[in-house]
Length: 578
Image 1 (cartoon, rainbow, N blue to C red):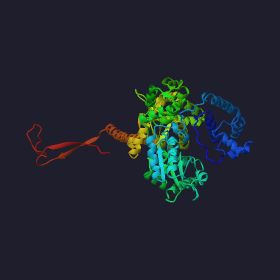
Image 2 (cartoon, rainbow, N blue to C red):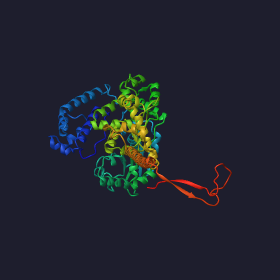
Image 3 (cartoon, helix red, strand yellow):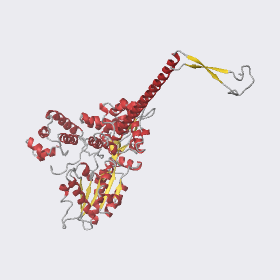
Image 4 (cartoon, rainbow, N blue to C red):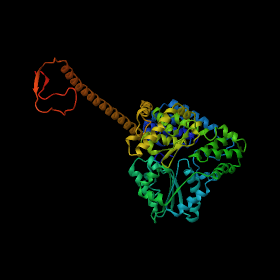
């Protein structure tokens, strides 16, 4: 068991599964220890330790304490968790022994086909695609129901088809895990005398998210793509989360399959939602109040990732049913469609480290547009924006964890809240919004300004100046805000500061030049005035210089009383010359 990929768990599948999920997180936080390394530290075997985190059954107290001790944690603290899980497991067993018709956030399995409703047309379309093509891809956002469609819809249909068309054919369902090529090489290379195999690969995104070895990843992809060969005895259909379509397109063979033989899963229509609500109950002889059905359709329609939330709310409502009736009162008693998911969110948040909790807060607040005399609204953000944060790997891990808990939906390279009502129903998130409302408004303005600046080729005219720059620096220069801005936003603020400093320096230089010019003018003026004053203050000396004139007058004659006569002498006073 330790050599095979671990089955994916949801923390809210049940107390046993939640404890196993927490044990896996503990091993990851301890440095992704191998079970062989852990077995060397304690007296239990590799298989026993791996089974403790499998989620298939409750581990014994001794095994749990050994597991925790091998990871360097406190066994006494985890013993309390183990007792709580044991008590919850006993309390949640239905007294009549009736299995629940709803699976909560967990996907429907092939054996749950009798409870799988609302996807008949899509199942038929997918079966037609995979019988026509030897290699096909199903894609959709997280929470859109891909896993249930494959497991409870396609696999049973292929088993019937294979039994009818190819009696010797087999259908195998798998998830990639960390080492897919090594784990499934034998399955994907059947001998000529072996029956033909339909390979259904769920959660294909694990090839990129979990498999860190590039050679291992490429080998597994090549093994799958070999099914396209006419003489291959393998047919492949895989499901991938929509935000990983870009990663798939990087591989030529997968890119061609996305173009030629892919199917995208969309949201369920109101009629399909009604069937998904009433069908499983009817299969167990139960009834659903009309008011409850209407309320559920209203609460879930057009919400990203709404199907797991719907199934979880129905499971909790079923547990509080009255006889054979699922009522609106029971639905409201469990907190409506978001009550269970908010409780899960609090559980997930409580297990985070301080650094992870800070990242979660910054991440969720980026997904909010604060209202101004209007309600707050969710804001989908691209994955590229998350990858430009100061710690992109941590941000992506947090997104994966919140998406796993059904708080976020990831699809089409976009991340968004799983339900708009989380803004008001999740008290922790609502408190964060109220506490940081002014900063959120400023961050929305900054994000938009940085986007426009980038679109216009980083035009200096689009930068912040004056009060806008001062206000942005007031909110985003604090140490706790260092990880809240993307690379583009940080570059925008840095360019704004540099432009502001350059303008201040230029203004100071202009002022200095003006001062120098005025000083020079003042000096020149002082010299001139000084010379003039000195000239005026000197004593006047001189002599009378007679000048004799002969002939006609030196200027035109005109009758006036002082006209000179011929032969008269003009007396001119001349200053004495030093």
